[in-house]
Image 1: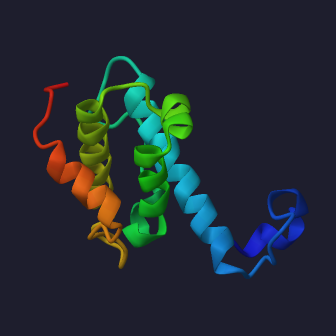
Image 2: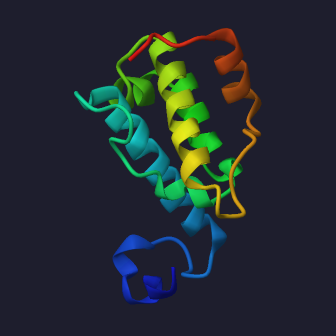
Amino acid sequence: MARIDKLACVRPDLAANDERLLTSVVQFDALAMLIVLAYAPGDRDYPYHPSFARYYWSRFDPALARVITEPETRAKLHPGSDQELADDIRRMLTMAAEQGKGFAGGGPLTHATVRSFLETNPGDRGR
């Protein structure tokens, strides 16, 4: 984030030292991984590096809640069923936990909507 002062185009509405800017980048990265899991064929082991893994999940779980609760957002980012979305969120979190072991960030999920959605859609469809 140290270089953000040089790139005004990425922060038109926030000061460079505003924590919301980092949260926005973390949410973008987490959503990008969710999109890759939904659309990318082939290797599902590590199709996307979870750079967001070093941060607390509370930074990005509000974005996951929006995917779960907002039909328009969901349609654009993850076209699968509720079960497929839940499985991809779990897969994303598992990869993030593995990659983030050396950092101070990580879980648990703090957003009740995300936790409830995962509890309502247990299991894995095996991909």
